[in-house]
Length: 267
Image (cartoon, rainbow, N blue to C red; front, side):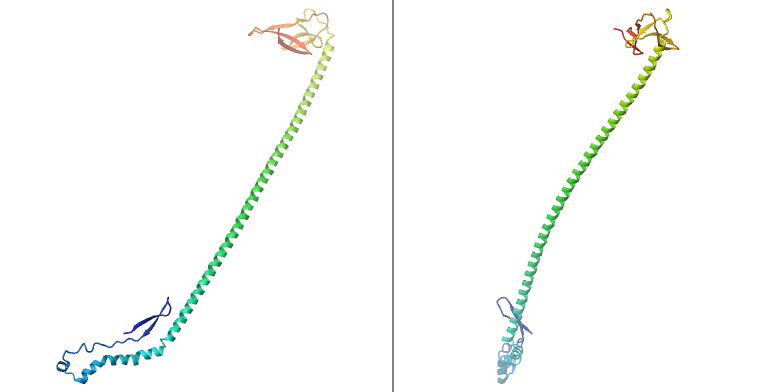
């Protein structure tokens, strides 16, 4: 049966060495009868051989198995040196791996720092872009407001010009109407002048009104259902024509002013 021998090469590491084990039975004497000569029938020489068997077996094991194995494997100093070299190599590899890990972690930290710095620059640039956009929006709003003010001013100007044109057209229309009225009045005056030579006939005209402005006297007549004034001359006396409202009972006076009949409340 094989057995593993463990020995320490350093304080923190052990290296196993495989050696052969002694498997022979060593309780040879224990197995003898109490009276081996009488019961077992052993001779003196055989009894001595039983007593010497364990030692002989140990000598054979040491000389034929253990020592050759140890010498062949150089399991003493050489095996220890090899194990120590392997341990040192493994430790160096561990150190190298740790250094590589530390370097990788440092590089990762540096990359993270660079990423953080780049992110800060990006955020700063984005804030600047947002501020610029806000400024652009404010400027655009100012431009729009200015444009709206300009449009409103232009509309006001056009409205004012339209008002001026309308007022001028209205004034021109009024002037033209006044001119037409003046021409019509001039025609009527001419007609009145022509008719003024017609003498008033006593008893023909019941109502004679005098124009308050021109002082021309008119005979009030109805011609085909239309109230008219005929200029008259002579000694016919002009009087006011007073009418009473049938419903209200108020008094009104029919008079002539600048060739036009007017009706006004009697005072």
